[in-house]
Length: 287
Image (cartoon, rainbow, N blue to C red; front, side, top):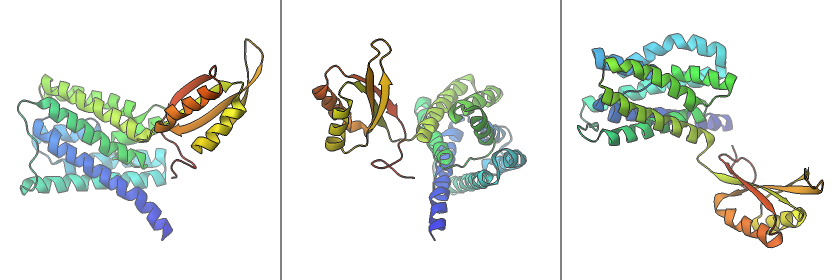
C-alpha cells in the first residue's frame, strides 16, 4: 500500500501537469494562432496547415522517439515519459471534446495578444515544470532536453528554449511575423517558469559568517532560531589567523533576525548570503 501511494505521488502530478499544459495550448495558443516549440510545435503547425488534431499528431510523432529515450534514459525514466505522453494526448483529446461540445470557450483576442502570450507562457511553463519536477516528460523535445541535461548539465529550460526557437523560426511560413514575436514571449516565460518550478518554488537563505566569535554566534542561532549550524575551519589569507566560518540555512523571513544576532555578537563579522531554491532535511521539507 505504501509503495502504491508513493507511485501515486509521482503519477498524479504528471497527469495534472499535462492537463495544465493541454489547457494552455487549446485555451490560449491555438485560438490566437500562436506557436509552441518541440514536437508539440510541429503538431501545432500541422493543425494550422491541414487541420490535424493535436491529440493524434503529438502521439504519432512521439512514437519513434521512444526507442531513443528507452536507450538513453533507461526503462524507469521511459515509463514516466510514456505516462506523460499518453496523458498529454488524452488531455488534448479531452480539451478538443470540451471545445467541440461548447463546454469550453477558448480565449480569442484580436487586440491584446500580449495578454494571451503572457498567460500562455505561464500555463505551458507551469504544466511542463510540474511534469519535469516529478521525473516525467511529454515526449519529443523533452526527451532530448533531459538527455542533454543529464550528460552536459545544461538546464532543461535553456535547452527547450533553443529547440523551440528553431521550430518557431520555421513557423514564420504559416503565421505572421507579429505572432512569431508574441510566441517568443510565450517561450521565454515558459522556460523561466520551468526552471523556477524545477529548482523549487520554496526559497531559503544560506549564511556564511566569518567571525572571531563563531562559537558564540552558533550557540545563539541554535537557541534563538532552532536551526542547525555547521562550523567550518578557515584561515585568513592576509592575517594568517585561524577563524571559523558559521554556515546556516534559514527561511527567508528569518533573515533579518539572523543578521541582528550576528551584529549583536560581532559587529565586524563578514557575512555572505546566498539564495537557496530547494532545501531538504530537518526543519525544512522531506521528499
